[in-house]
Image 1 (cartoon, rainbow, N blue to C red):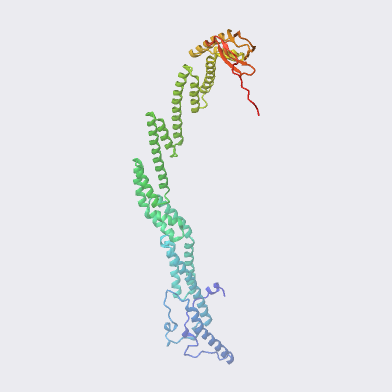
Image 2: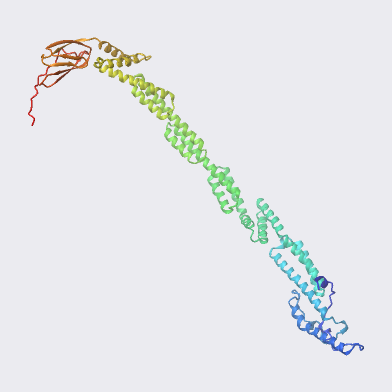
Length: 511
């Protein structure tokens, strides 16, 4: 038999005292029934009575209405009262009623489970109206149950169960809305409402981490709000360190407070900016005090802060440029003095110092090349003037002549160069005027004048020579060779040059 068939059975009060097995009056049997059939019917009734007496009580005891004290059948019906067998409910009908009662109790048990769960989740705070309606529907089922109308009782319990189930199914939706309300209350600085909403969300979902975080934030919201007010005032007054301290306190109380984190970054950036400005000001003060090295050191310290680094580097570059320009200007003064005094090698050295500062300076590159040429010319002129005796050699004379013309080709020569050229010119001219030299020998020595030729043997001989340095070599067999060096001209011309071998070579025996 299905549940629908069971539900259609009309409730009938069943009293064991009314059973024919417990009646004091004899059963009214039809006289026209065969005795065998009567006995068979009586036997069936006896078996059914045994089922009702011993089996059914065990089955239905567990499903008795939990909210009402169970009353024994004997207590409800006085033993002395006589029951009319014609109105006695049959065992089958009693079994159907017991099954209906069990079904009602099953629904009731499930309903109570739902009720317990909803009570644990404080349903009165979020679904009180629907909850009350569901319980009221269930209480109607209790009335039907007391009236032994188990079918209607089950229907009422089922309707209440549906209402409670719908409430449980709506928990996720309620939770979502509760979190929205809680977040809004937190944003609107309503700590009481936010705390209540987050607490409810945790009841609805004990594992909800967002709700747990929100509850902790709501619990510190009032203190956080006060700290924000104080910190903002400090920030506006420029007391950045105090503001930073309080913003940090907020972050410690509420680690998820994004505004506090942003404020900390802002304050830290402002503190760093102020430090940068202070260091840069010190650097510029050193510049004004004509201490560029110390200024650069301050600018470099500012650059290490990693804020406005381009500005610090630009100041360093500008200072270095100014310093370099000052050094270059000083070097230019030295160069001008050296060039004016025609100290060309000194000028070359100063040009090199300029290029060490900036290797791309055109004036220094060109100036160095020109000064190097002038320095070389000066060395050649000095050497020529100091060694005019070398002019007697044709190749030396020609080279010196080239140097002379190179000097004469220079526009606006200085005093030193003019004097050098004039002196060299006189030396070159005089170097080509021959002077008579008197050579004296002993007619035994073979005389050779280097670069001129062999003179042979003689006692005295006169020869015309260009001014210069000469060497006369004398040779004689058995005598040591002699060399006589002498200078012609330049005020050094000797009266005579004696070339004769006088030292005999002593022969030695060889073993």
